[in-house]
Length: 191
Image (tube, rainbow, N blue to C red; front, side, top):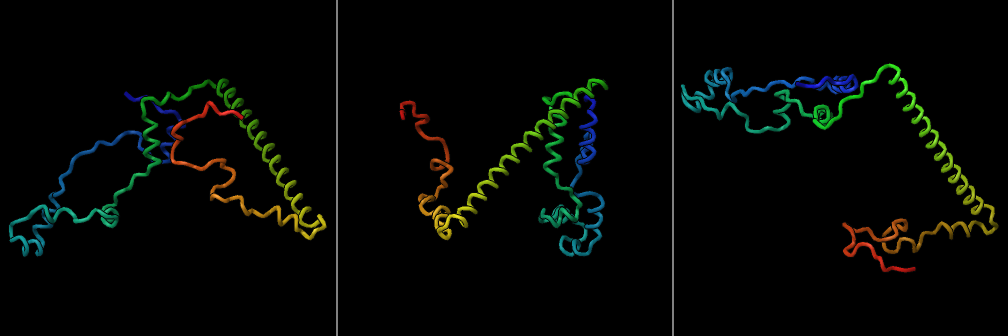
């Protein structure tokens, strides 16, 4: 017995065109009656194999490339749809929340307030970073034009010679490796 899907999961399934009931698959023979009748009536097969001999060599194509898939109208599976279907029917997926109207309204209000709070924090952080960037730009411009030395101090400060001597950016602090170090943390190190 399958549990009832929530409206959210049902709408996701309808958007991505995921069938909610799994279709039954039946095995079909590669040599059907229609293809065997075509082969038996074709003059090429009678010339090659004789008048009454039909084999399954002619019923299956040589290649399974994209041209054959396009001819068969074979639909390629989208990985997103496969993942959504996997998580829709996974046994560890928790059941959807069911709220009364008042409880849903409280839930929505708290969630919306949290979203607004996060947006205000994010906007304040972006404004602070923009203020710092503008301050650095103004300082560099003042150094370039107003220092009285024709911009020599600015050019020297912007020179990156000797910063990347070992081809590793200075921000990394140590050379990047494929894995962790062999000895791990050095507990005996003192300043």
